[in-house]
Length: 143
Image 1: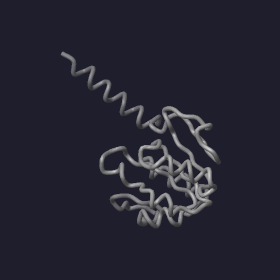
Image 2: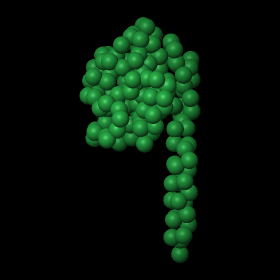
Image 3: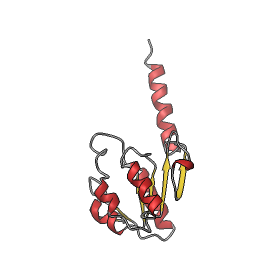
């Protein structure tokens, strides 16, 4: 759902939106290979669920195939990519920018165009409602 919402927002800003997903979505946006996405994109948003099937997806080869003018944004922190490689690419001017949500960390840890924020992608109306529902079910199950 987060990736779909990112696509909608980017489309609303006039961006040419393409996406990669393990399963093709019935959407107005074009589904492309992961390789094509990294080679051709100006901005890449990583919105993956953190699980064993996704942790190895963003390889060094994919990161190295990005345009020097590209921006990498991750609302999943740095769990999915080689952060040392991203830092080196930023420092050498081989990546234009990087943004991430991290439970820790500061701008000073990176050289280049960087925006680090605390984690808050989960803080949506829908996620809050689900958390309340889970809490209520747990409370009501107490005997």
